[in-house]
Structures are given as C-alpha cells and as structure tokens.
Length: 418
Image (cartoon, rainbow, N blue to C red; front, side, top):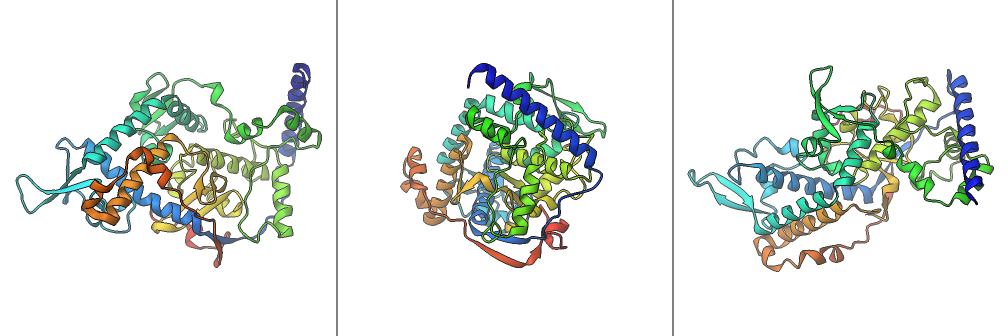
C-alpha cells in the first residue's frame, strides 16, 4: 500500500468512525443492547498472583519506610498500627519477622526490650538497584503519569489519590517533584494539593488499544475496514464456559460494534445512560489498568478517581459485566481489579523492568521465609534470580454459584475495606 492509499484509508476510516459516533449520539437516549446476567468466576491463577504481590508490596513499602527514617530503622511500636495500611492479613510485626533476609532485628540502642528493624546488606543493594531502574526509565515514568492526568477532566489529580497508586503505577517517592517541566503542584477547587499537567503532550494521546491496532500492518487494518469494522475491539478471554453461550456471544458482538471512544477525548457530550457511554467507561478502565505495571489495582483506588475520570456513580458494575476483559478478585480481604489480557498462563505479559527487579526482591523474601537467617548466606547471584523463578501457574477457574453481577454481594456493594 503506497503513501496515497494509506492516507486515503486513514481519511475514510476517520469519516466512517465520525459518522457512526454521530449516529449513536442520535440514538443514545435509550439502550439498545440487551445484557446478560453473568455469574462471578474465580480464577485461581490470578488470585495466587494477587496473594503473592500483596506480601511483596508490603515488604517494599516497609523497605521504603526504613530508607526514609532519619535513624535508619523502625521500631516495633511504630509498626503497631500499620497492618491495614500495608494491606496485610497478619500483624506487621509477625510479617516483618518472616523475612530476615530483608529486615534485620536488633534491640533499641536505649530501650533494650524494644525490637527494631533495619535493612540487611542485600536489601540495601536491592534498593540501590531500584533507584537505578527509576533513573533508566524516566521517559517511561513521564509518559505513564502524563497519560493518567490526560484522562482526567481538568488534567489534574489530588495527591492523596495518587500516593496509594505509586506501587501500581511504578512511581518513585518523589514523583510529584521529580519532573517540574511536565507536572506542577497546585491547589484544587476543594483546597487539596493536586498534581497538574503543565502541557498537553499530543504524542501520548494514543490508548493501548489503539497501539495494539497499529501494531498490525496497514494492509490488515485496511481489510478490517473493508469488512465494516470501523470500531476497535477489546481483546476478550472469557472464563471457561462463557464463550460458548449464544446470548453472551451476541451481547459481546453488539458491544464490540459500538464506536471506540478514546479515553483522551472529551466525552462530556455523550448521554451518561447510553450504550456508547458504557463502552467509553470500559475504554477508560481498560486504559488505566494498562498503565499499571501489573495490569491491576484495588477497586477503591479507582473509586477515588471517579469524578476526575468522569465515571458514573456505579461504574464498578462494569468489572463483572465484562468478565472477558476484567477479573475481580476478592483475595486478601479486599477487591482487586485485573486486566485479563495482561496475563498469560499465570505470568505477566511484557513485564516492565521494575517488575523484573521486584521479582528479585521476592526471591530474597522467599529465601528468608524458607531458610530464615541462613538465607543470606545461600542466596544466589541476583542477576540469575529470574531464571530460577520460572513457574508453571495455570489459569484454573471454578464457578462460584453464589455471586451474580447485578446482585448485592460484597463484590458489588463495595463493602470491602482497602
């Protein structure tokens, strides 16, 4: 396909998409797609990943807290009320003692009966390596944070909503001050400190779904256009048994035919009760989860961004309404939302350099859990850790008959505590 044909194809596709969007704008005063009531399905592979990463996140947060401490250690007393903050299901003191390869226990210099914890030498090495990962991936950090702010209505988010997302988005402690040319701290209308985008970077206004479409050859895209597929389609991986159901297939086919609204476009003119708006909400949530390192985050973190992302009041129903796109996990006494396409056979697809580094951190944790303090002496070279961390997790699933997407279970009422 020569340059002229490519240009013509792009123009025709743009006009066709605009016409379809205009058509749906005219018909969006009522919903036309009949939805199917689906049951919640447990994915044991993803649940296991979430379980493991809950402990990994807690250990990393404790490591960062020790680094920030002016005395270089934390006391048992200071850890007393941190269990919920760390998302743990056991007391923090019991948790930190599980990993002697990371945290070294010693008596307080003044109060001998007060246990204290500092980083081991290998934990310090891991922290230094993490700082280097941040330095080596600064452009990626800027892009990811920019895209989060670009999806919001006012191009800014309260810092109190961003801080809990640091782990998921792979942001360093000083993310709000590190890039003054791109972001600045301002006072929001509610008086809260907010991080605001300095300038709109047009090159970032391309969603992950659009990137996936662009990865195919122009000729393939042209063939799809000729078949009438002007809208981008979300990748779907249904739980076992769903894909063969005719009603579900018909519903998803109608949903996929709706125009794709980029999360970086202004959608305030769309009827909030329309099918088109529902697909726009799916697109925003898909994009946000795509920006996270592990393609998942806590549901309550998304709730804190509802107004900024221009989401409807009960947007969390989307997660169980579209089980081919999202997975809702109830592990670790909280509710986590994951993007199904982000994992294949129990492993993260296209892992980020920071997630690879965290794999090393987890290896050190696990060695300490198994071998206790002797683990420091038997740890292999960290550069070889990833080769030894291979596992054969599978996405085994079992149907839970007690949970329905439009019911009043914990998964939908928001009774969980994050």
